Image (cartoon, rainbow over all chains, first blue to last red; front, side, top):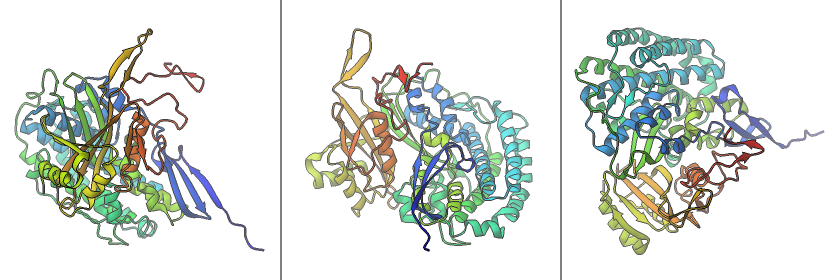
Length: 371
Length: 176
């Protein structure tokens, strides 16, 4: 007797631990093979954009924190940068340096969560604890700087809410010294672990042409083999003063643009971020971090689109000002929102268990997808 | 690498009247205003022309211009009649490293724009979001459903300037 086969629909989420938040995936299966995936989003929708229309410009900053809650510093950075360009504010050099240091620390913290939870999704629990241990030290650095571990309201339009804590430089140097061996340990434990490679190499391959057409940016695009980083390709702040590399996926363990490439690009980016922080700490000038903060934020009529290289890719702010104290429109081009569209393409033809591996490798944050 | 003026001239030669004008008087970003029902052809040209090669759509954003007549009824609820809704396209060429901004405006009473999903797949969810938030209809879009709001939301489009919260949603009082 022949086995009866039929297509099946399986719901994954919204309350599934490896969807990293509240994402519902409608899997269309033939046996265990994925035929199609339909993502359903919006479970975390707070309509940040409507809120900001009722706020003054500086009041929007705490809302930007709550979009990508793993990279809040960078969200503020992008918003402040857009407003400064719209208003034509020159920021003191010390402020720029501190922003870069905070931004890169945030990148490391964000990648540590991404890598740790990725390991946990696939079944390696120890690296998860190691990553969170190191991230905790970065969060401590943020806490002594501005009083908050996750949602900072630290980078303001034209400046910063506080100068650095007197211990900050010393503690950061200690962190870098301790973190470098930990990175090697992470590589030994997870990156070059045979079981991990078996689960991730040659899975969920993203070809470069598809990636560009779908607007994929950040580590996911670089893993597909394109040397594209806004810190170099559309420079902002003081990033052009530092010496660092842009890691690109090479297909070392499988094909270019597979899950392992996307994973390992983040490990290498953390090393580059450490380089930037080390140089910035050496070069940081003196100055007043509050001197350029405008008393009243009232930009001229006009619109601007500004983007920064967030840990997840291109974070863009499109701001329209009608000349009043409130923004007329704030649209956020969230990297996770755009990257999530390509997810069904990555999954087709793979197994149900690979969905978890692929979803973890593109590193989404639902707070940013739904805003 | 080309400036907005040079790109505008190329487009004017090709499309004539559907390119309306270049605006560069406002600070920072200059942009080109185009006809809403021709935008797919213009974008296809922008992507495929060898001098332009706009292979990436950075951002697509719906905007309520709120430039119509504001009418208050006897309860004090304000609605906007007439005027326009707009869609902004921020394009970029990763090969030639230039950027370009395109804007189309469409009637608020019947907001229709042709979809660019065929050209950049990335536009799919951006257009669904603009539909969800502003009610802009993207013609030829393969799957124009709500994306962030619930699928059964029937109380209008939240980011329009004259949007009012409903009193009840599925039997629950909304301003709780």
